[in-house]
Length: 169
Image (tube, rainbow, N blue to C red; front, top):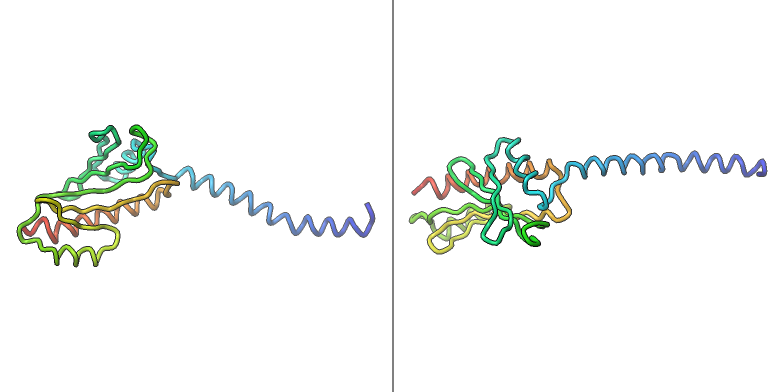
C-alpha cells in the first residue's frame, strides 16, 4: 500500500463509520417498533391489549367464522368486525360498529352535521337503526401507540354519538 493511499483510506473509513453506525441503530430501532406492532392476524393479542387498557373486550366469531370482538363503552355495546380474512384468519382490516334503534327525533340533517364535525367515524341510518362505524386498515401493522390512540378516538366519538343521538330519546 502506498503511503499516500493509506491516509486517504483511513479518512474514507472514518467518514463511513457514522453511516454504518446509524444503519445499525435504525435496524435495532425498527426491530423494537415491529415488536410493538399490531395487525389483524392476532385478534387474541388485540383483546389482551384492549383489556390491559381498561376496555371491555371479548373475542368470538361471526356467522362465517371470522373473528369478532364484542365491547362496551359507557352504555353502548359495539363490535369490532374483522375483514379481508382467509378462512377466519390472516385478516387485513377491522371495522368498529355500534348500532341502536333509530331515535324518532334523529334527523338526516343532524346525522350529516355529526359526520361533518367528526372525520374518523361515520354515522348512518339503516332500516330502523342508527349506526356509528369506523374502519381501520391494519395491513402492514400499526404501532401499539397508534392502536391505543385509535381506541381512545373510538371511545370519545362513541360517547359523543351517545349524547347526541342515543340518550336524547
